[in-house]
Amino acid sequence: MKKRVLLSIHPEYANAIFSGKKGFEFRRVLPKRTVHEVFVYATAPISRVIGRFLIEEIYEGTPDELWKRTEPLAGVSKEKFDAYFEGKRIAFAIKVSDPILFSRPKPLSTYLTSKTPPQSFCYI
Image (tube, rainbow, N blue to C red; front, side, top):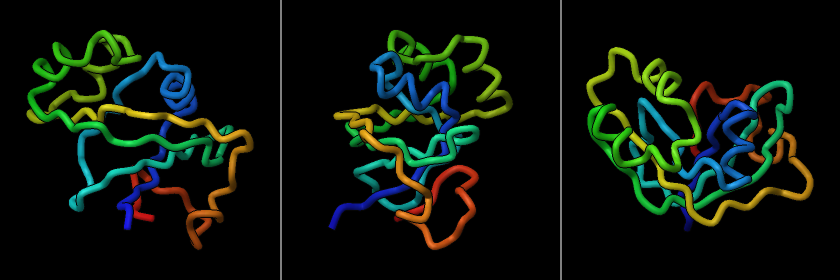
């Protein structure tokens, strides 16, 4: 059985993942369970599950260490990266592998009985 999560991601970053400009998804907190596959819920105004990717690897370190390792495929500016991790001593980067953009975005109800998207992620 594949272990999967549904991640809420702003459309700007979700689109960058599927266009190949963003090879890492940054997180302040990771799921406690081992996860292999991520379904991407693009937040408003899209409000749909638009695709999925596999997790190749997860990097952990200080924000400065993480930036040095991920910068070429960060898909965000250093200023946005620093703002996101402000006050955090440990940061995480999920390395994206095999991203697939769905030909038709799917409603949240395809994956969750709740009509409320996850704040960060939820298991599916």
